[in-house]
Length: 481
Ligand code: BES
Ligand code: MN
Ligand code: ZN
Image (tube, rainbow, N blue to C red; front, side, top):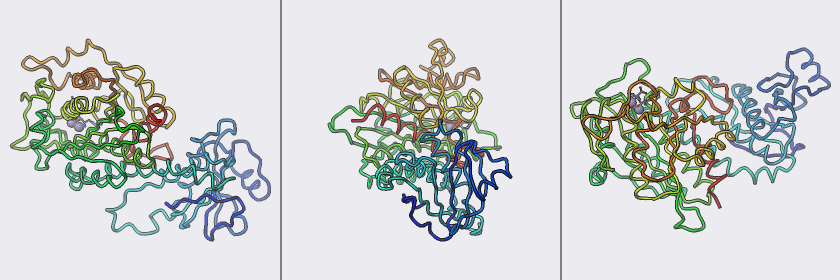
């Protein structure tokens, strides 16, 4: 999608659709007023109405933005996304967007809304005819001061690029995106100024990562640990912030194999790692003034003659031994070593991990909210605030010490499942054992990494990129400068 900011008197390109964003209860005259009077359109959020085009326009639609008093940057973003969605299949190539208030910040956020809504993963659709594909390739946002809007856009364009990068990773099937291929795509981000190190199984064996390696041992694909660094702080030695992602490129469940129905969803069991990669992408893309580390634990969980068995005991890098009760509780095994490595090597200010960790979080919170577990109230508050500002809903969950008894093992230091009761909580308590003394939060994003047909206009069905915006906002609001 090509984005431009134009002054209101600039001529619209030929064959362009004009989307006019209007407030609820506004009055309209002429042919537009007649069309509104003959419809149920009130300007409420989410409404759209085709109205007669003005001279030189191919099409005009009204887009409801709700009450004027409540209109803000997020309102502009959603209205713009609704506008794009309303005309994307029209056959027209350009969209001109007219906002009811067009200061630079709102115009830039509107452009972000179009970029996010226009995401589509169609690279493997070779027979889809052109008339089924979106036609709009260019959006002109009308702004009172178009130069100021253009100047405000680059960090948001970097965010849109990063969310698309994360969505692509999540959308790719597991025969294409296996650990080494994921690592290779992240290595390409070095051109943004990131430093990327890739550790293979030999290096992880030397580090004693028996927990992570056990998960991948049934796969022919080599497990990888990827370390991504962004050094943007004025002091290059300033303590970094750190993010760790679960990257199970495919989760069959292993020997504790999952049922066939819906198993294809487990290609997106690397959504946490994709979000961390996307975050590092945007931090570099907008040259954030912070030092940050992103660590991805990349494995494939397969059943095989070499696969680990229920009942096996593995030794993690921390030295703690783990009894494997269910090989399908693999994400926590990957994170155990990735978290420990992160804390020991980087001594960060805090660690936030993201993981499509438990089906139970979907039962707890449904499909909009991710779960937040934390040993630190200030860190949790920062995450929840950023979630509210970015429209990536997050809900704090408890970490009750007493539930640890559910993961006591008879023969090892801990076991990897704690029964059905509070399944997301015992998973988080397990992770907590692998962070010694650093403020830490765990986001269980099994509920939000992938969307069924969505009511949020900036999130097309499929990979959401959940977490990239939220974490980018938290870093920007609290840890830069
Ligand atoms: N990747 C799954 C969790 C998941 C389930 C993500 C559904 C997205 C949608 C995870 O590895 C898993 O299998 N968890 C088990 C844990 C259980 C064996 C303790 C689960 O949630 O059933
Ligand atoms: Mn699993
Ligand atoms: Zn999994």
